[in-house]
Image 1 (cartoon, rainbow, N blue to C red):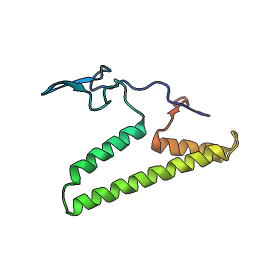
Image 2 (cartoon, rainbow, N blue to C red):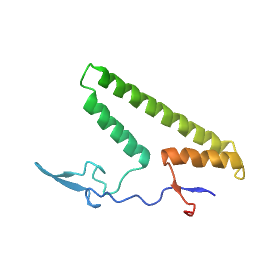
Image 3 (cartoon, rainbow, N blue to C red):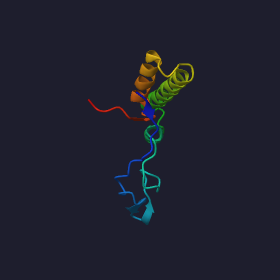
Image 4 (cartoon, helix red, strand yellow):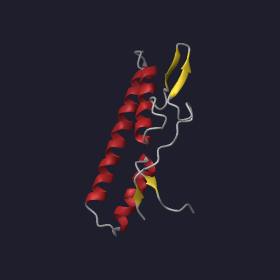
Length: 121
């Protein structure tokens, strides 16, 4: 089993791969793909969504703003830790090391860094 690098980017369904979206002010770059027509990697989409949530809830001084800031920090910290674990599993293990392979697949299930080339089943 091996992880294949993600070679084909998913077409944006908001702009249908065109990169443009209609707005009240005319045609603008699609907000979901940034005008590329294809969606970025999963980690970029997670970060974009997290920033949008932070922006929506960061205005207040209340508990919600503090809780969202804390949650975003913890999510970023956990994702960074998983990337470090993936790096160690890839660098320090032989290709036939079953434990390292299992760790790489488990981390990839959480982060979606690579396209899974295994057959479904």
